[in-house]
Image 1: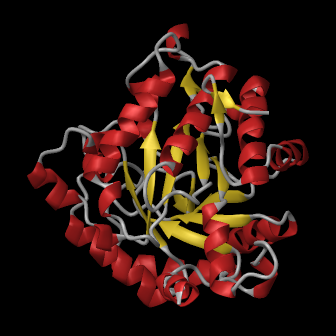
Image 2 (image 1 turned 45 degrees about the vertical axis):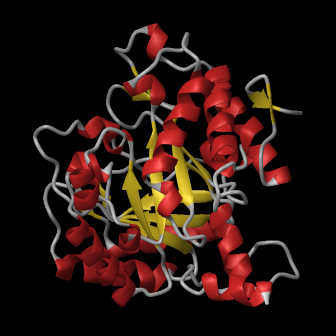
Image 3 (image 1 turned 135 degrees about the vertical axis):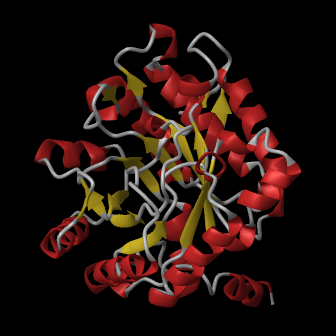
Length: 342
């Protein structure tokens, strides 16, 4: 009976071809698909990580999923580029999380905090349909999900109605791909009216949650673990506690800094470890997320002007690898003094 309930809960999860199902053997197919989402480890980049040295470092650090965007340098990727990027992901045994930015950036919004690329304006339904169909043509079995918001819905001010529309549109074109919503610090102090306007669990299948403590709130000399526990506790009270058991949370931690930032706002390697480990451990203590070992880092490299990320900091890559190894080995993290146990 319990197995039947689990299978029914997971029927909306991404459907992947057999070649892409690489969860533990002997499991029900739907449970394998869900396992893939539970174990995504991502370092987001604005470009394909295709250099031999970079992709080798990416895989050595136990990253198993690429974020690929529909646009490059503000223009839609041509069909041949999409085909190439999907072939590249397959050749390296990597799944894909597709970013299709669709919403305008408001003047009051600081786009430098985005998870993905910035859109120039609200994208039409026809464009969304055509572009999803194009990615589906080449990547149906490689793409694990899609997201349309390039930052916190509360900061972008994307209404629930718009999010529901994007959700329905995506599932109409590619029913197999789960849609990820996105929220961040803008929701912590939101009023009940704002929450009703910008957040609805029925507007997404899974939820990306942005956590950038050093950029927004604290310095390396503050208590990272205490900040993260407080952040996720408040997120749980406002948002996570209402999620269904088949809705995962994907935490995106800060692995970037700006070249002009004071040293106290530039994470050290130990801070990256603490941030990733504490966020993953705190998330897995929340009901409904206890088997969730998914984790994302922003950002892989400094292709954005004035920014640097994991690729520019070997100590950051080593820190990410330590946490990713723990997640890959155990499916979770036990902490000792704020760091993963060896």
